[in-house]
Length: 525
Image (cartoon, rainbow, N blue to C red):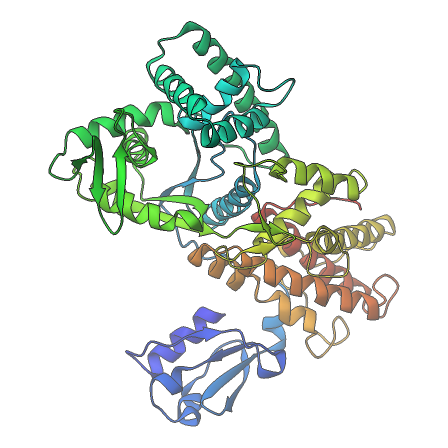
């Protein structure tokens, strides 16, 4: 419907950049435009020119024009989702936990955002490749292995061992030297004892991460798990082959971009920066992409600017740098404390899921829904204060609130089926409900006026790669459905069949929308 309105305005007012959007209040219509304002045209004159199928009334308010859809147009029907990315092959790289360390809150946020973006892109036509880039070599591995090798931990997890090793590295010069030596030996695979410890730790960590991915509903494509042990050597060669781009400084190799960053250490080892250059090359070798999206914390935004600036000057990966987009996310905080895997007393992503599952009476699907909703209910770049109690509330603005609305709709449909009550109109078959005041209310319900905007919300979220537009929409839909349900006697009521028909539309929309967010869709709660 929005496209019809846009086309009519373009015909009446060509060459003007305007927007058609949903008004904040339903009393201002179903759509509104600023076309007269930006086109410097009398809004009433423009409104009089607009004759649009499906629009019952056009109203001028100040410089804006509001559109009220007809009763037929507001009757729920299957909505076509614009295929914005049809024919595009897009890689979404996200989560990126490091073996030998804990799966922390940042990984949980990256996973929730990245998975939802991947689903939105798929739903709007793209062929999506889910990728995961993990640091299986580097100082963090050496710190962990040093702690285990020197019996500094007893029965601890690899993540706990990392904390001990990291503290020693920062406070003990002898330990620092030993850890640096271990790091070099791991790169060269020159020590059998270290190799064995490394192989065992890496295998255990990766297997453990797979269990967490399963809980979160993510399945990365086989062959698209990238590792720093692969990208490091490639990045090192790229840096060495381009002395015109990089220069030596105090024994290291640096790049002078917006900020000066080290790409090769004085010990000749690749840094994260050069590994990311190698990652660009490895992605290019694996598949021909139209776009590559990387989801990480916003504290890495300046880092990516420098790495991509360097990459654009390297013929081997310049094209990949242009195709790469960094989607950043904020931090999750608890009681004003920034979470970090580098210190003790950490609430990890895994422990948060477990603790919330306990509070949710063992319902892991509800706990995951609560966490993902909290992450996805606002712009990705914003920080989050996580409140466990609010996240599990059934009173609104939570994942369980949406899940419960879906469960209520499904329960109502099951009951209707048991009683032999079935709606004639089938949303999935693109059929509208038969017209006539005896079959439906003469005036559109707030619920119907909300349902009509689902496709717009999905399109907006996919275009901006911001899942929160879908989250906000579904929350409003659930509230409209619950409000209608509280006032309407659906089964046995005056318009029983139409009530079931509306419930079908709500169930389908909530189910599909929650799936796009990666939030579980339970049958019962």
